[in-house]
Image (cartoon, rainbow, N blue to C red; front, side):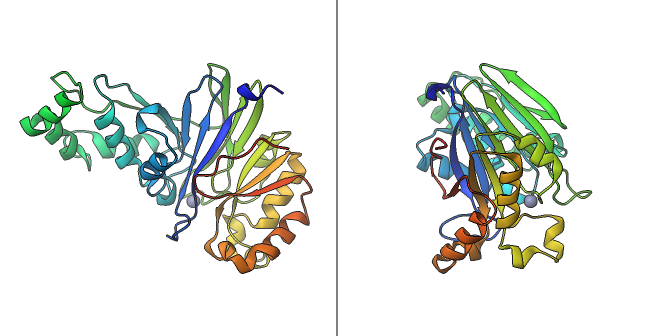
Length: 295
Ligand SMILES: [Zn+2]
């Protein structure tokens, strides 16, 4: 399998809505064979974590949301304004994909006059003190507003270009209050599935069938989830492992890991639970980790 055509994953956010020193919220970066970098979700501090990972916001022209819980999208205003502010002299549109309310979410940040951050770019575009900063970076006045193009999507393939294809499937999370999608990236050299938040379900298993790498939510141990209402919306260690086994993936990467499971005392128990159902490669995700090629 030619390595240069493999989709390469960097975990940017590997946590949950609970802030911890090690992880907070969700975000993943996939580098395509062409070198294009696509960001999946934009949870808390994504922009800063991208910088820590050595990735400039200006390298990213596509963002894909799994759903619009704040631990998956709340850094987006920072990301989009930072990208626009650093991207000089030309403003290249940012394409944003996701289930509803992706369009409303984007418009609500930037549109005039009521977007929550419209005052920011309006001040930067119009004040001479901001204009000189823009010119110092190589910009040419007049400065344009941030260009964001939202695409609300459902299940199915929605991007096929430049040596990669991205397909969405339904994830079962907190419907009917909020839609959620899981995504599969296929290239000539491999395949990666990002579930976002989901309980184990047939649509996610089918999406992941035969994939090289499955990044799956791992909220808690089975005994803390099974038989409770957590079962309706989230996935346990065992649930992720059973999904990986049923789908026949090569490598399972645990992400969105619950804070309790990050306790070093849990290391043995969590490994035991995962290995009880899946005998492939298991990786416990960490922020800024470059996921290794599957063994
Ligand atoms: Zn969620």
